Length: 125
Image (tube, rainbow, N blue to C red; front, side):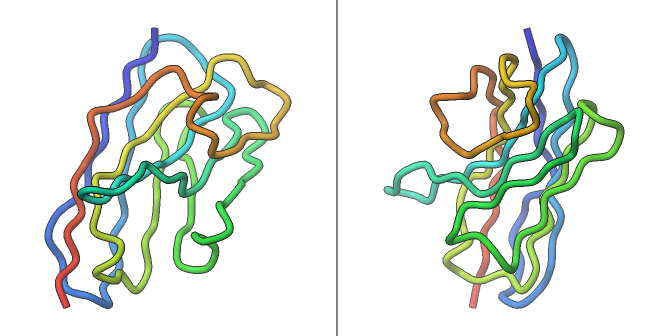
């Protein structure tokens, strides 16, 4: 099993930058990713990264202001949000995929078996 704990969310003003963190423990895994869900909205993928290769993948709509990275591979993952906008307000989740080790990670939620509880980001204008 993989345990994931997100942190770093909060209430911020539009335009600021913030960094979300995800700490992992338990079994190893090949991919992990950030997703978000706004109130009343669908879950959407933000970005993914390979633990072994550090290859990064961004959903098309998330390219530009979001940066995914990891500290020690498979231990800590980050999501940098630059120039936060009110539409970024959502619960942000990290997720891990134990089965993909080829370095080609994606943001298809069905590929992820383990999920954190989420950290709330609220951006006011």
